[in-house]
Length: 298
Image 1 (cartoon, one colour):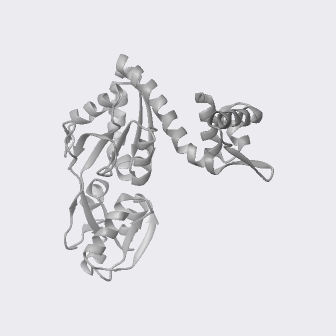
Image 2: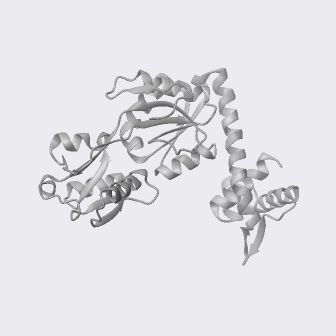
């Protein structure tokens, strides 16, 4: 049950075909099929089945896939941890961030970190909240910057930073705001901010029109254009508020305090700790604060 066989299975699932998997792995199609078949023999169940002219994962293959991802993720994490413990400045850091953190908080931080630690290999994925926690649970990333982690997640919160969710709109629309009648602009399914909007409206027993725009940038642009009200991180609209393109909306119970969290797996690597120390040393306002290991995230 070698790493190469596990990687062949995962790559077939990710690419959708043996041919595409072979291209990505730079091997022959027969090598990919043989690797997955050998893995199936080790397990005692077939992992691939014929589907027309191609192959697809069997039900057993789909079931085993999540375990294969975790094993590969742990192997990658172990390699990064070993390199990072020897010299954190020569390690690798795989980051995942929700959209606002990826677009507003990280660029300057990554640039200053790279200037100080140019030999650290940096990898970043910006995606919705549900995706970042999935990546962390699969050991596919070392550190997540997002809101509060799921209650049942086996994670380590290393630092937090104050953050507010504010309802904003174009000044004219804000002056005519009605909780039950003014449209609200929503992110895509899987977004933590979208879930917060829905929970807020349910708590207020309000059912206003909703318009799904997909991304944080589209939601903010839609609010500036007067399409509706957006609930967004204050970090993401500071410039628009200062310029008067957007103004806070007088909605009851807002703003909401939703701190940012820097979250690692159960055993943070040396390079992960190096990056968090860099976050904590930054002079920005508000500042990141260290969380004592074992303390509950607030």
